[in-house]
Length: 262
Image 1 (spheres, rainbow, N blue to C red):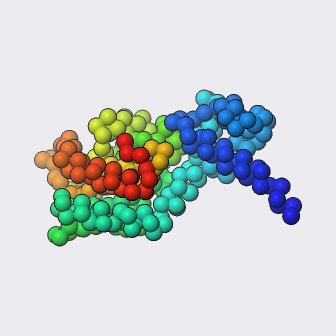
Image 2 (cartoon, rainbow, N blue to C red):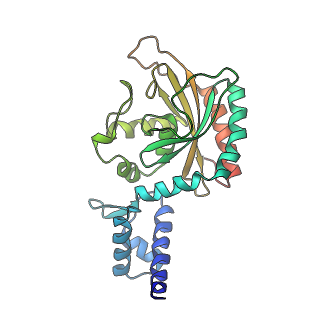
Image 3 (cartoon, rainbow, N blue to C red):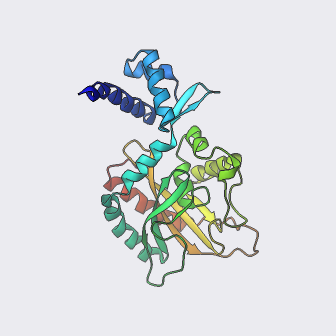
């Protein structure tokens, strides 16, 4: 029975997470306390416990708090349940048939991108991006499609140092500043593109799937064979017609899961 005294604290902790999730960026402890009607001492204690557990990240320089990596991992685990895959599979099947390239659904798992569903066209192309495979999120179009809609502080928490910026080819962001520029460009464009960042000779176009709070939950992508004229130069192709088909599929999946398209 002694454990019952922990229930109010648990409820308050969950309420704190909801407040952080409801804001576009990190917030101060005072904001959390005000929105929940909690004493500041209680709020700081809850934030400290959640930070230790990895569900909250503290930004000392800004004196603010945001969602931590554990919160994203929990969200990704939720997405692994069968309903999302069942809803996505027929849409990806249709997309693959429509464009003639492999269509995939991926989710963030920490700073990695994990593929949940893969549908091949009638004449499939050999890819490393199979179901269950994890790849560095900053190299994939699917990963960057979602990262582009996360608050800057959360991206920083996912990529805290240079060591996490692993590379598979000679292409892709080398650090946080370059990643942020890439994400800003892709958000302005409206879709994400990677050209030879994962596998030489292949490119991908992706668009995010959003939840009811307009936060990225997953991403739909199409991967195609593509060779630039020279080995070390990225062509700059963005495939707008292909992106249109990808976006339509992502929007339809967003609606089917009760999300809000953007």
